[in-house]
Image (cartoon, rainbow, N blue to C red; front, top):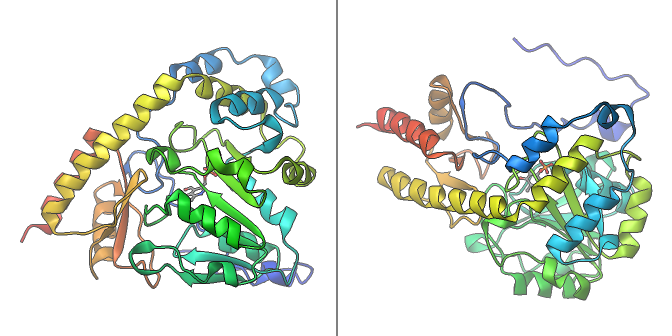
Length: 354
Ligand SMILES: Cc1ncc(COP(=O)(O)O)c(C=O)c1O
């Protein structure tokens, strides 16, 4: 039984009292975990070498507040200047820093909906109402976005939970047409080659791109993300972030992960191969999903989706289900290892047998 909510102390800001707070996916162990889109495969062996060599100084000394070595390495890999990069404690931290840097109460934020639920909470913390604009048919970009007068437009590309991708050219047109900041959250973009806006960053001074190490670098537990933007904006964001927001060990792990390009390539390749197999097998259930550019599938299952989610959970298999309009007939299923997919498929066959 959950405890009844405690009355909030009256000193707490009304905007915070009014919030429910973000509900992260369940973080259970000892299960087939296909609910929060982590990598199914481990990080680079070079990451393990760093862990084996952890010394007292990794813990005793503060980290580099500006993560200079990590940013220099990222600059090489992503082909942007180091001054255009900020490192965060996960891309969620980068998002927090961005919202805190840009938004005062009364400002306007908008996003296509449905999308990653954290944007709502970050706006609420700033005392800002976020405008949800339904995706156009087939998860196309809503044409009204540049006319909303929002200071910040934010979208995930590939989108979560749909996995769908807006082409680069359309996003560039949006950046040009929008008189404000356009933030594109590319947490999953490595699973969709050619979909990143990073090569166009310099051409759009109002563009912010966010990247995560939780998916294609298999470092969700270490917490590392990057924000890319015009150096003038990054400099302002540096003032807002926690001084030591990326811990010493994570900076080293990030450097090791970035250096191993071959491991990264293989991890992406395996994920895409297993996604293709999962799609072939799931088709047998008559389900549909939009074409995914990410490491998950957003399956339209029907009105028994919640029941199926609970039945899978009872068998030790976690997928994601939301009891919300537009989402409650779907399951979002992360791509797992072949063995994890086998467990999922066997359970589904048993549960859905006529
Ligand atoms: C669209 C999107 N952005 C950001 C994140 C968070 O990434 P990180 O683990 O780097 O904070 C997620 C995590 O699921 C996500 O789906």
